[in-house]
Amino acid sequence: MIRLNSTPIVVRWGDMDSMGHVNNTVYFRYCEQVRMEWFDGRDRSQDEDPQSLIVIINAFCEFLVPVRYPCTVVVDMFGDSPGKSSFMSHYTIREDTNEGTVCANGKAKIVWVDSTGTKSVPLPGSVRSLFDGSS
Figure 1 (cartoon, rainbow, N blue to C red):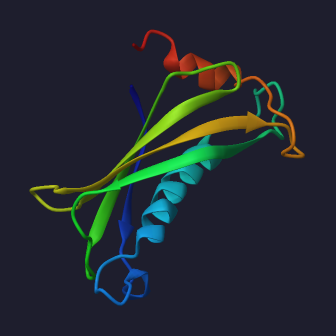
Figure 2: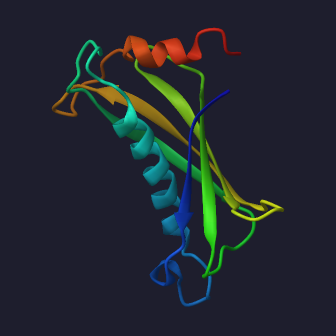
């Protein structure tokens, strides 16, 4: 598994639900944020199809410890298991403290698609090369 990105996210008061902790759906938004920062931060000019996009075809989150406002979390994104047009992304959501308590673990399968978002396309060479030599 390779590290792709790490992003601190300040928890907003509005992220909480009536139970006083961050709503479960917001964890998926945190993963989306780190995923899109990684995707948008790539140099796509050398990609075979620079207009290609990513979609996720599944998402999973294991909630371990409630996150409560005020707080900053760090979301780490990792990747493995590259296929022809996809790879698995893994996420760790942890408190931004000395202890770094892990609050949740997640994963999502990322698929590369054409600019219309209707047909899968091969992973760009620059993405595939990230996995070269990894196990």
